[in-house]
Length: 346
Image 1 (tube, rainbow, N blue to C red):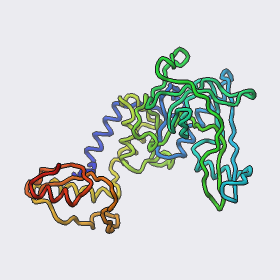
Image 2 (image 1 turned 90 degrees about the horizontal axis):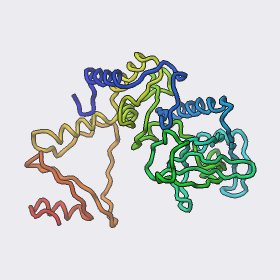
Image 3 (image 1 turned 90 degrees about the vertical axis):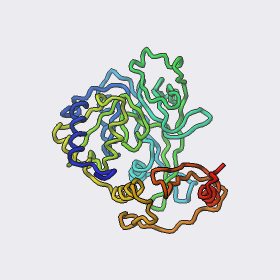
Image 4 (image 1 turned 180 degrees about the vertical axis):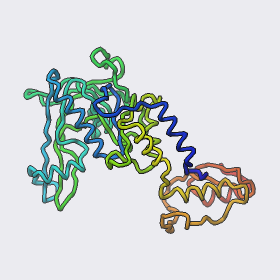
């Protein structure tokens, strides 16, 4: 078995673990909303649809007080001056580029993530916040509870949770002029509160996160729910501390079949990584030449920079192949000579 290759036997074992450990439900209506349980997918299309499903439920609940904020989408044909209100085309282009949605629905304790940095207010992009006081015609600012840096844990009972005692702080957020994008010969920007709903996210955006729970759907036929690399599956199920907190939506057998198919996919660089690691860990002498035909990437010559920068490097002994050294230096040639002389490096 190659280092990055999953055999049919291993794939079956992984599928069995997921089958025994995770939760499987037939449809989205079986999902009961729990704070902090995020819907995670491979595509932005699935993410947007999941956010819409949650917001539709909020809209249909007449007992929840809500405030809607529509963005002002602008364009300029002179660069960054003479901004004008954009058409539906401008809005469509910004929907695919801007982090902020065109429409935001605010209600008490709605989970949000910030989309920009503001050092004056002390928040950064991606930081979690919960709505404290929704805007109104007389008060345009959005008052939120801002989580401590790195915190992704939603209070299970926000009504009784002591935010301030647990390191949260209250911040007022106002409309901002968003990032400027270029498209079709125009400059575009969206004026909106610098937040987005945090009901769902893509797998890419959750890398490095630890979440209370993950809800997802994996399909071999519905394109918006398809995955195309087994690494995506690894990131998806490793966002939680326990696999029991992962819920798959859809027919269980179809979901498991789709998961197995993903596990058996070999990526475009797998063959070369296998070849490289095989050579490095071989019991024979360390090779002087690697076969670049094993990779689909085009090799090219790139000189070592001559700037005043540092390097992290790894050396493998030619005489004792299982010995290696990792170090840092500002002069690669000097350090190599020191190692080969037997003197080591300082």
